[in-house]
Length: 487
Image (cartoon, rainbow, N blue to C red):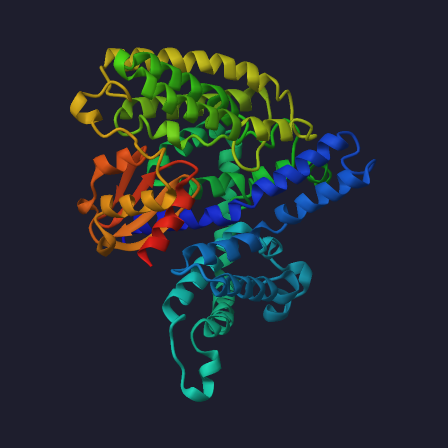
C-alpha cells in the first residue's frame, strides 16, 4: 500500500471519533441557548447539557485512540476498539507527570511540560494506528490448546498492553521533541493570525480530492499543535475561564467556512444551472438544488464540489482560493461562529449563543456577498473557458443519466458490484460520510458510466487499487448493502 493510500485510510478512520462532535455541539449549543449569561450557573438543565457535551470534548484523545483503532481494523470488530482503549490507558498512565517522575527518579516539578499534555489527540491517533496494525496482524492467531481461550481477538488487547509499554519508553524520550515541534508549528500559524487562517482554509479545500483534509483539520481543529479550535470554542465559558480561549480569536479556523458552505457554493450551483444547456436544465436543477440545500443546512459540500472538481479543475482552484479569502476575512474582522460537524445553518444557530461567538450575524452578510461572488466568478469562468460542467457535456457524455431513484438499496448494491468490476474485484469496502472507500484488485476494471448512472458525483483513484466513489450522505448505507451482497 502506498503512503498516500495509507494516509487516506487514516483520514477516513479519523471520521469515526469526529462523528461524536455533533452530539457535543448539540448538547452544548442548546445549553447555551437556555442560559446564555450564566452558562449553566442559572439553570440546572443548561448545566446538565453543557457538562454532558463537555464530557465528549474533554475526552477527545481517548475517543481518537478508540475510534482510529476501530476505523482501521479490517473487520471493524469491537476488540480493535478495546485494544485502542487499553493502549491509551497504558501510555497515558505511564507517561502522566507522576509516572514520568517515578520512571526518571525526578521531582514532579521537574517533569517536562510535554507530559502534562500527554492526553491529547495526537497521542490518541498514534495509539489507534498501532493498535489497529497489531489487531490486523494477530486477530486470527491460534495458540496451543492449553491457551486457546486467549487466541484470536482476545490475544490482541494483551499484546497491545505489552507493546504500549515499549511505546511509552520510546515516547519518554521522543515525545518532548515531538511536542515542542508541534507547539512551534502551531505558534507559527498563530503568529500569522488571519493570514494563517486563510492559508489553512485554502489547503483545507485543496486536499479534499484525495481525502487528506481530515489530517490537516486535526492540526487546526484539535489539540495536535496547541490550537484546539473546536474543543476550545465548544468549551465556551469554561475555556475562557481556563485561559484556553480568547473572545474574537478562538473559532477563527471555523468561522470563515460558513459564508462559503451556506452561500458561496449554492451561488456556484446556481451558476452551473444557468450555464447548462436548455434541454438539460431540469435534470441539472434537481441535482444542484439537492446539493445546495445540503450545503446550506448541514455543511455537507462534497456532492456539489465533486460535480465540478474533475470536469473543471480551474473552478475547484478558484473555490479553494475563495474559501481561503473567506476564512481570512472572517478572522480579520473577528466575526466568529463555530461548529461541531460542519459550517451549515444548524451549527450556526447552535453556536450563536456561545459566549465565544462574536458578531456571528455578520457571517450571514459576508455570505450574501460571497453568494454573488461565487455566482459571477463561476458563470464567467464556465462561459469564458467553455468548461464542461453538469449540463454542458456532449450527448455521448450524458447518455448515462442517474436512474437510482426507483431502485431499492439492495438492487443498487448489485449494480454497484457489477459497475466496480464484479465481486472478485473487491478487496475491502468501507465508507465515510459521503464516499465509498474501496480497495480493488484493479480499479481499471470499473465502469465509470455505470457508476455515474448510479449516482456517483466523481471517482478518485489512488494507486492501482484504491478508489473513492463520491455519493453523498447515502455512502455508508450503500457500503453496508454492498458488504451484505458480497457476503
